[in-house]
Length: 261
Image (cartoon, rainbow, N blue to C red; front, top):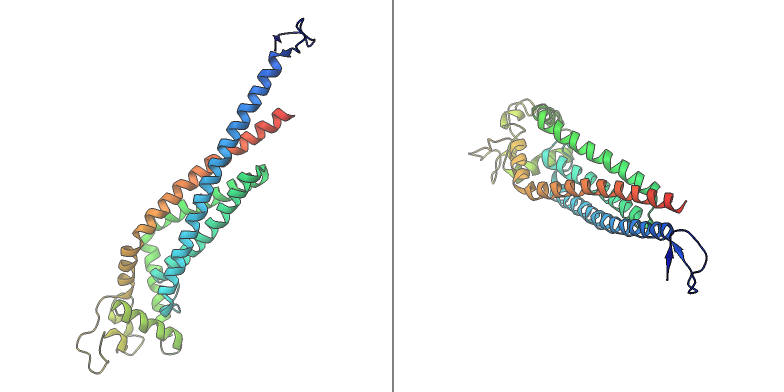
C-alpha cells in the first residue's frame, strides 16, 4: 500500500492511498485503548485485593465478636468489644466499596468510577481522622470509656445479663473492676463479687484479683491485634492505589470518548 500526504485517490499502481493523518489518528486511538485496558485490569486486580481484604477484616470482627459473646452485654466502650464492632463496620464498608470498584472497572462506566472514587476518598479521610483523634485524644477517649463502664457497673444487681457479663469477663481475664477492685465498693457496699476471686468462692477467697479489667482487656487486645494492624496498613496502601487507578481510568475513558466524537 502506498501512502500520500495529500490525495485520497488511487495510486498509479491501483492501490488505495491513505492519509498520514488518518493513520496517525488510528494509531493514537489504538495506544489509548491499550492504556485503558491496562489501567482497567490493574484497577480490577487492586479492587479484588481490596474486597478480599474487607472480607478478612469482617471475618476477624466476627471471630472477635464470638470470642467476646460471654460478655456482650457490657457497654461497647469495653476495648475488645469496640475493636470487634469497628472491624465489622470497616470490613463491611470495604467489601461494598471493593465490589463497586470491580464493577466500575469491568463496565468502564464513568458514573460508577466517580462514585467509587468519592466514596473511597471519604472512607480514607474518615480513617485518617479517626487515627489522628485516637492518637491525639487517646487519654480523653480512654477516660470516657472507663467512665461509661463504671456507670454500667451500677446496674450489676438489677440486670442479670449485665451481671453475667461482668462475672464472665472478670473470670476470663482474672481481673476486678474497671481500674481495680475498689470500683465495686460503691456498687456492692464495700464488698466484691465472687468472680473477682479466681478459683474460689467469696467466703473462702484468700487472694482477690487486683488489676482492673480495662487494662487487662487492652493488653490482651494489643497482643492479638498486631497482625490485624499490619493487615490494615496494607489495605490502606491498596486504598490509595485504588484511588489513583480509578482517577486514571476515568481520565482514559473520558479521553477515549472525546476521540470517538
